Image (cartoon, rainbow, N blue to C red; front, side, top):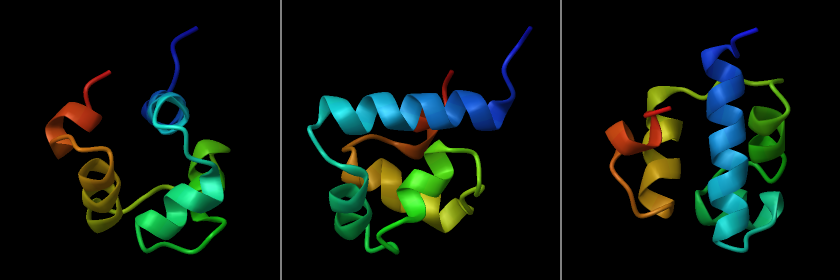
Length: 70
């Protein structure tokens, strides 16, 4: 069974965030997002908008296009 794009993104975000050593709350703060927002994305409760994706990519020191490669 293939994963949805949301599942692929959530998994990649979680992996990259953990590699940087950030908790969900810390990472959300660094991205200037609500403290629970990253957890909601990772748990497939929210779909991020393009501006949010841009904030996430910037904080992970990568281009948006790289963040969205699965």
